Image 1 (cartoon, rainbow, N blue to C red):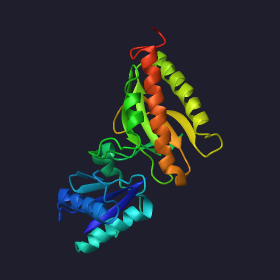
Image 2 (cartoon, one colour; image 1 turned 90 degrees about the vertical axis):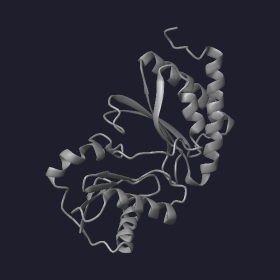
Image 3 (cartoon, one colour; image 1 turned 180 degrees about the vertical axis):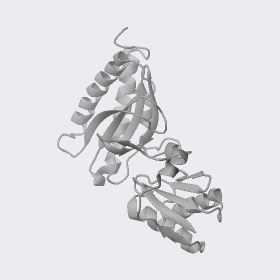
Image 4 (cartoon, helix red, strand yellow; image 1 turned 30 degrees about the horizontal axis):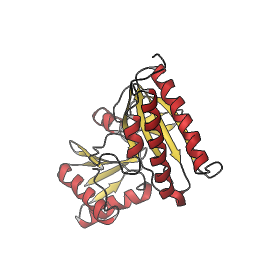
Length: 247
């Protein structure tokens, strides 16, 4: 028997050791890959003793993720029960590192811990590469955007002077890109957020660059990203790769 709990946006499967957590996690991932997303190479399941934590991503959310879990159980003839009550307190000490972080200001964040062996997606890779060329800045998570989910890059920076230098350069080249592609009032929008907490267990202050776009213009997004990245790289070379406002 497997008990299914929901915590924030993740599903927690608790079993009585009648199944092998690692094997079942791999089967759920295979089902996702074969039936939902053939390009999926990200393991969505984390195994901790007799628990399996299944995390969503981009286009795989809510009821669809739950249906995948149930269909996997049905195919394997595994009995299950969905628990309406909250996750018992005694499970938190064991699972805390694998559960999403919650921010009162921005709601549920950060997704918990999932091993990601896919690397950087093609659509966002040019920007990720150029972001990492800026002094004191390093990226640690990104997504090229999916349907209504925005493109984003999460990063940290070592000093405020380097952050100031980066944001001034970014703003300059965003203005040029917006003019070139006539993006004003087009539905394209750029935001820069900050937060403090753990995102995949990186402690401290970090920032998130986010580019929203009309879902029907996803391919246009990639063209914009390539052009923006190229201009930022040229601009950085012209002022020197080791530059900062303190130099």
